[in-house]
Amino acid sequence: MSVPRFAPFVLALAVAVAPTATWAAELLMLERAGCPYCARFEKEVGRIYERTDEARRAPLRRIDIEKPYPAEYRFVTPDRITPTFVLVDGGREIARLRGYPGEDFFYGALGTMLEKLPAK
Image 1 (cartoon, rainbow, N blue to C red):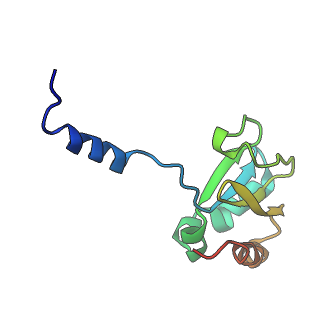
Image 2: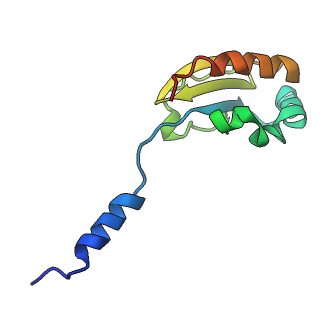
């Protein structure tokens, strides 16, 4: 049985579009239903975060602490305080902010956290 002439092209295309295990920085928000500080974060920051410079460096990913962590974040140490913000990069935890004391403090603390990211 011969290999079709287009087989190398199909293989090259499959390799080009296959998912890779690249680890980009992300800001995890550990939350739970009924958390008043999570609701305050959502009202003050959560609705606009994706349009910020900070989000371009570390997109927000929400994780419900009442459910099992997604497999790709099992390296993150669980926390019972919500919200807790965990900056991750390269499959490791870079920094953590426990609680939400308000928008100004959050962005200040997040700026300090982002400074810890390796230069890319």
